[in-house]
Image (cartoon, rainbow, N blue to C red; front, side):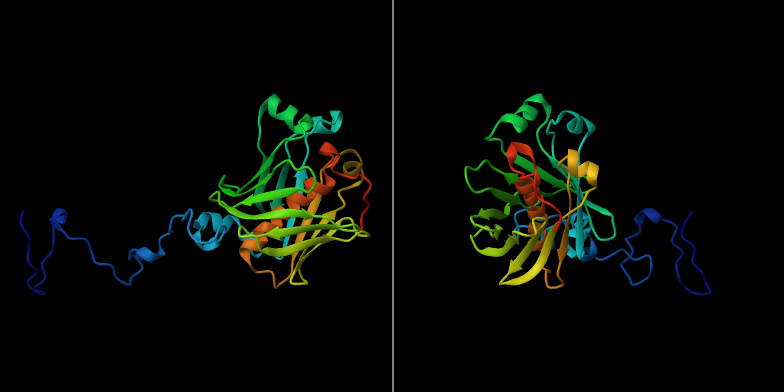
Length: 273
């Protein structure tokens, strides 16, 4: 059967589909999207560490609350066995935005009894917290090595590069931390007033850009566990996505440094502001 010509219009009715050339892209609804609209893969090692422009679209979407929300809620979880026998298990947190939608799940690494014994009794234990999106993608990692005097946390971006460090400073009447870039520049300072032990102000060039607060978790939880709830409240001027990731990491570090009973780091005497 050959091709038949429509005498009225002079156009050829094509029946040999195998020999057809692909249709050119047009502006109609069935046109294929242009190549630049396709999702670009994550560019590990490109640009400044933690820059959202080099993250995958999925990772940027999962971190939207961390990057843009005016407030983050951080909730710590404890298992029943930890409450009953005082055994310190792995630290676990969920972090959500102002709308309550979970954005990041945080878990301490180390499986098995050997890791558990080191976590509870070995003074040189190196803590590593991995921040994962709901789909299981690595968003951040916070590593806290053993220190003799001043504690220090290293924050790693999603691709493993150093995003910054959080360093404890010596003061007499207040608690102070510096948030430092990989090149050694102090990006912001965290100050905990002596008479407000649950409040930590974040200052950048003497301007408050955020506040980290420990929240009351209820009499039972506060009395018998060290599971804590925190909020990170961002000022409208705090729009730097890399600094916001560091502030989320700072809230985790503040909890482990000042409110965790492990290794006697928590005073256990602080009262709500």
